[in-house]
Image (cartoon, rainbow, N blue to C red; front, side, top):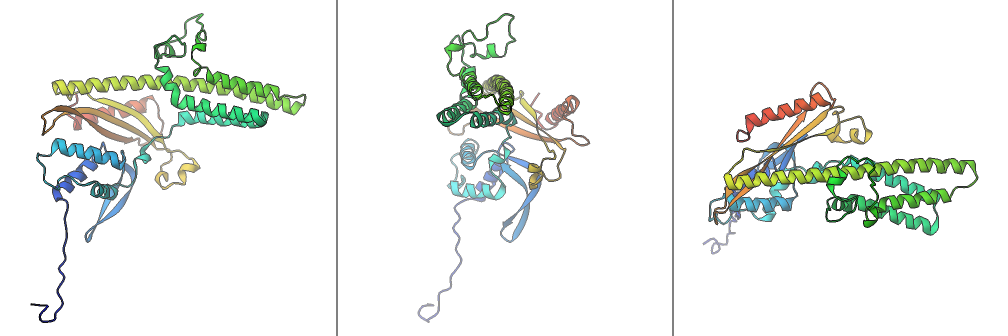
Length: 369
C-alpha cells in the first residue's frame, strides 16, 4: 500500500541474536573462576554495556584465550543439562570478545621472574662471553662462543632430563645420588666419562681457561687481567654447580607434587573424597626501591611491601551427563596475602601467613580437613 501511494518504506530495526542470556551468564561465571583469573592489587577498568558504564576490578587471565575456551566447552558438556539448546554454548569469537571485555591482560602477566636462572646461568654466561671476547680471537672466539651457547641450552633445557635417569651408572645421573650427602672417600667423577652431556659444562670451562692462560704475556697489566679472569671463572664454575643442584631439587619437588596430585585425584574418583588438599605457598615478590620497578604504574607506591601467595588445590567428583562417566575436576583457590606493619620475610612472618591460610581454609573450604 505504501508503494502504491509513492511513500518510502519504513525501516524497522532488526537484531539477530545468536546466543542466549543464560549462555552468556554461564560463560562469564566460568571466566571469572579463581582458577582462570587472578585479581590484581591495583586498578579498575570501565566497561560500557548499552547506555551504562560499569566499573570492574582489573583481573588477568591465568590461561590464554584458546585454553580458556577449550576448558569452557568441556565444562558445558559436563555440567549443562543434555541436550543443550542451540545457543547455550557460545561460539569461539563471542567467547573471546567476552574474555577481552571482562579481563584486563594476558596470562603472561602472572609469570614469575626467574631470578635463580638469571643469577646462576645468564649472568655467568654473559661473563664467559666477555672473557672470550677479551682473550680469544678469530676462529677460537667463534668456536668458544658456540660452546657457551650450547652449554647454556644444556643447563636450561636438557639437564633436567639427565638428572632423572636411573638406567645407567653415570655418577651425574639419578636424583638419589644428586640429593644424597657425599660419602667419605667417594670418587664422584669415576663414571663421568659415560655421559658426554653432563661433562660438557666442565669441558667448556676448561677450554675457556686454556684460552685465558694462552693469552697471557709478560705485560703486568695483561697478567693481572688474566689472574682476575681465572678467579671469576672459578666463581662461575661454582654458580653453575649450584644451578645444577637447584634443578635436581626442583625436579624432585615436582615429581613428589605430581605423585600427591595423582593420589588425590584417584581418591576422588574411587571414593568421592574431596577432603585432602594440596597447598603451595611462597613469597611472590617484595616491592623494593629499584628504578626498573618504580617507573611502572603497577609497582608505584608499593616499595617494601611483602606479597605472599597460597594456592589451595583439591578435586571434586563430576559425572558426565551423556555417558555417566565419573571423573575428578581439579579446583584451584588462590589466596593473596600482603603483610601489614612490616616487610621482613622471616620465619615468624611465614608462619603467620601459613596460619592465616589455614584459617581461610577452615572458614571457606569446609570440605577440606
